[in-house]
Length: 629
Image (cartoon, rainbow, N blue to C red; front, side, top):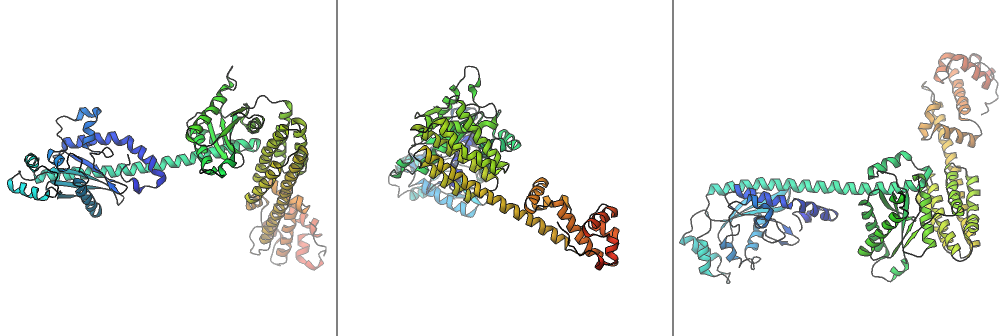
């Protein structure tokens, strides 16, 4: 059932809103019966637009007294409820068969009038009975209309029957004798009862408008939470793949927010098969993949201690807490989860996928190893579910090599990282082999290792376009390397490109950082307004780096420490201030942020060659040798 005001909602909210509305439907029916018990006119119907049509409450899509009376669970409030559809109206609509060409047309016109006017209306229907229409207005929008009536305000009489007969003369299917008998049975109510009914319906309309608004707000909140949860899951998966370099406090925060009671211990990877098949298919690969991703994310959200996300070039990753860690559990839980994913995708998607499962880890910091093992399992097996068994020492050595390389990169030890990375392809060939399927396995492992290296490079400040270019060139070279030797060459070329780019990045970044610091110090020292000079403790915050990093970078670029550079600039400023005959040595020392005049005099003499007092009395006699930094 489409709820009232459905067409006024954004398309993305309509399904959720309809689900929420269905939950309140039973309560609305109960309200209708309770209102009927206190309302002088025993018939209430709710009508709203469904696309380009208008429906009445006696149809299955609409809420009304008829449906409420048919609900067996509401017997407690039926009491002496009268028939909400009088015999007269049933005859006019040909027992509902001609409703569209009779009553519905009249109701649509009334709905348009009250919607435009924004207020209730008491009117005569096309057959001559009194009807009431009350608009449901929410935030200035007409979302539905409450109807009641099908009564007379004066007792049936021959003159009234004559008017009714004239009104329905075009409805040739009506038996005039039968309709006349029904006319004399139409309920009669007073004008006061009609006004009471209008007031009750207006109160109900206000309540419905409030409910509609609350439902919409609830849907907004729900969708916001879903979007936030999806972002949190993606960020958590990203951090878990970073391993040692991840922000541990952020990992804990995200795990709690998502609902993990324990950290994940294993990684499952979902890999689509045969992308080239979609080139000639009516369904695009992107659409089919989006369906697969939706199925996996939905299943993960409904499972305990499971998180999934799609990371570009890393595939669909599922992190979960392996319940098979219990004695005798083995890989049973992991295989069951993989089979659930395959079954759900098979039922709701049209893409063939395979599932690779890495080994369980006792620490979330090692989950990146489980991720690599999942891809290795897919390369080693052709089955729908590939589980990585306990690997030999050779595989563990490769994983440790990748971890160490990424750690060296994060510490900016490029030379050591280069040696580590260039030896990785040789190590893979030696440990995994160099013929047949061994080359394929080495290629898959090096591709996943390249992703880890690029992720480390991205965290070090590599911009997205450059990272994307490195990825495209490196993966393409690895994919088309047919032999073990060419695979080693492709890996070496890819690593050299990344390392050279990071070297340029470090060089450029360090020089720019030093230039910013020097410029900041120069601007402060050039001021002659007597304000205090720049403090060493304020410089790191001013340029957005830590004190240790700034000190090391300045020394590496200039060959001098930042402390000495700043001291020289302070003494140069002191020389300018001392040129003023009115300046006192103690005041100059304070303005240049020396702790006391004695220390200032000692530093000044060491750099200038004379005391501050001697320089102040006769600057021309001071040594002309420039201060060396």
